[in-house]
Amino acid sequence: MNIGIITGASSGMGKWFAFYAPFYFPEIDELWITGRNVKRLEQVSRKTKIPTKVIPADLTTAAGMEVLASNLSKENVRINLLVQSAGLGKIGAVADVPAEELEEMIDLNCKSLTKVAKLCIPFMAEESHIINLASAAAFVPQPEFAVYAATKSYVLSFSQALYKELRKDKIYVTAVCPGCVDTPFFDVAQKYQEMKSYKSFFMSKDKAVVKTALVDAKKKKRISIHGTYMKLFYYVCKYLPTGLLLKFM
Image (tube, rainbow, N blue to C red; front, side, top):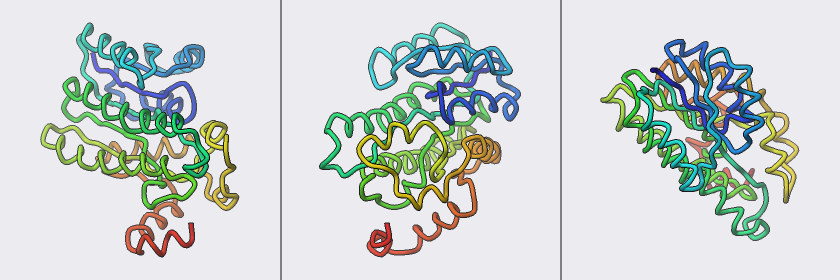
């Protein structure tokens, strides 16, 4: 059986990946969606276009990882698509955000993403795809968003290296690097400090970012960037000195 796995599927972009992935990857027979909120996962599963298996799991814990591992080992499956959209961010100076919340960002955005990739790679089919949710915050250090941006820099770097490692096996990895996206992410992110007002000008719709990501994954692109402004930002960050960019952040 060909499956697609989507982490963080209970809300935000993960939810839309669950809705749209079957249209872009029609070879998938069944979706597996994971997250911590069982009720929301079940709501998503009722709206998907193909059979969907709900796997409640906190992937930052050993128990949560074991739940996913157990499901994979028990069934004869090939993974055609893995979307890692689970993520967490907190806006605020490092000195102002509790250490355990900084660690939580690292655990979810970096450690869990790496462990899930490691777990799933042996089950990946030829011509399969991994989509990892990074961020435009990965392009340059972000004062007052320092840990989140650093975790997304990790995701971007890890994804590009993984692309090179897995390409010989016909497994392709795409890092998705949106700017601000209109999702419930900011309900949590603004706990200690509000987002800079100018960033709202560059806000994208979650559905649009997801569609772009799925198209770019099908094209086997290493990086998916939605929107003209974010593409311009990528090249600005690529060619201007970091010290100069930090003066304007």
